[in-house]
Amino acid sequence: MRARILQLGVYVAVLVAASTAYAAPLSNTQLGVFQDYLSCRSRCDNSKVSLLTQCTNQCNTVADAAGAARTGWDKNLNSTTDRVDYELAVLENRDAGAGTLICYESSAVIPKNACGLASCTATRTAAECADADGDGI
Image 1 (cartoon, rainbow, N blue to C red):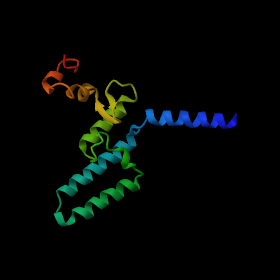
Image 2: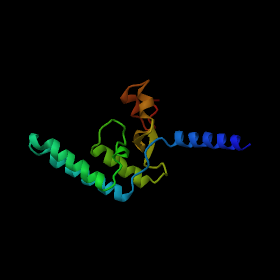
Image 3: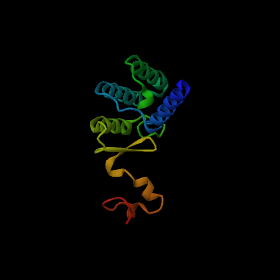
Image 4: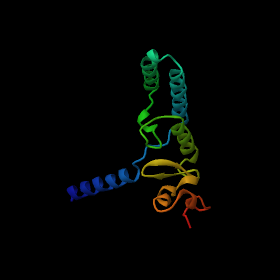
């Protein structure tokens, strides 16, 4: 019986993990660190090429020292961390799980007005999918 309960617990944990595969919304403090990181990276991009690596490493060190889990910053899952990810993180934070500002598609954060658009454009043109409800009809 005990083994069966343990087995059931593992099954439930797997289901919960699968349904929440996306990174958690960032807190206000985490958003502040993210914004500081992006500002730092922007300054690096405007610096001399010879100093770019050193500058970028400094930004990473500052973010790490602030306890930032940068793995949760790539909100659109395109393998880069940029201003778009920050804006999506702000929307996700403000949405607070209500589903009124964002949705999740393949674990990526999507602004509410673009939810379902990817599935529409798989079979229709972008112009067709730009109708009021985004279904291409």
